[in-house]
Length: 107
Image (cartoon, rainbow, N blue to C red; front, top):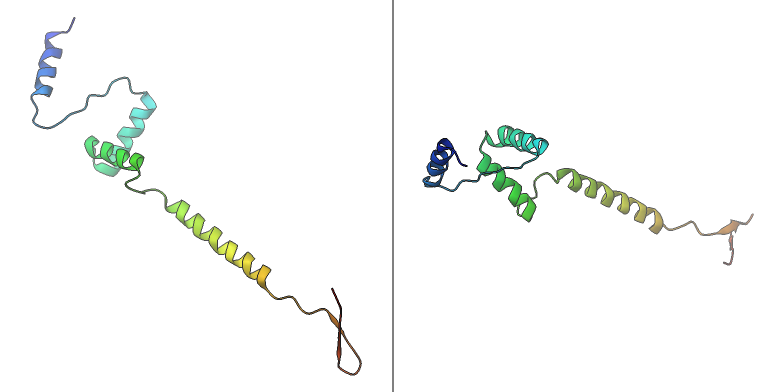
């Protein structure tokens, strides 16, 4: 049975001119993390926090991937260094003779 106070609250909520979300059955840790994010990044604006989370989920905003971009750049530089080492021409194999000529060895 719904109390009179609950009915009044629901009636108040449904009369609002802007959308609202009522979340229940949220795990405590998730709620604490959400509230912390909302307070720190969005001044307690839960609506903008939800929008931010949804944008990230949908891939619209690539926020928080800076560390991946830095690591990718580091790996690319490392690959370039390895390629340079591989492409470095090796010294020709041969023996220098007493008269200054080089006797080339065959592979």
